[in-house]
Image (cartoon, helix red, strand yellow):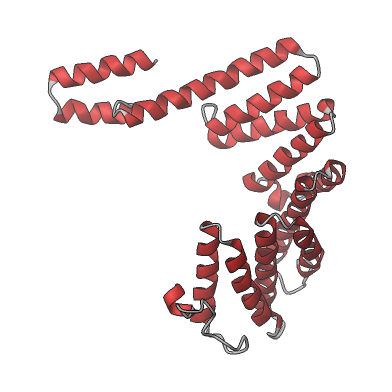
Length: 273
């Protein structure tokens, strides 16, 4: 991507006019910025997203333009967030919220992106240790999620809201409020991933901590034991895979290895249970 859109000597974009990008060039720029984000080179990525944003800001009003204008500005805000420049991210998000109200946008996309912008605003406040302000934002986002059936079943949105809201309540020592939030998060993870998934284990652990803070020791201990079971199960699966002795690997070994080698692997697998 760098060879395609950047001068290798100066790392400056070869595209000097933001008015004349082709769609192929825009895609290459976006892909490059996304790669730079993956490589945690956020300042370089931000410069490219700002270039893309400048292009879309100059285009006639249309559904595609409105969507790309919003997403490029959100990307800029995201880079500032990862650079720990929360003030700049916070400055951009209200405008993103206004862009999300555009009549050009599809209604279902509009509802989802509006909730996402709200969550980002809460996360910015959270990182600045404004837990009270962040809690209010996440509470509003949760209410929006529960009232709108089109986004209610979205795992990622629900998970972000519940996890962050529970964290706010913990920092505010509002453990009685944190407990039902973490309980809902555990149920969400269990329904989505199953009762042996590591995410469910961490949700159970958070719930046990909230229960302990509420002086509900017996409940906390029972939930904590469940979380430990999930952690041990996942550790066993990881170790078994590393040593070539998980269930599928043993089935393959039964067809390709000697009886002696297979017996050794079965004994090692049994020792892990």
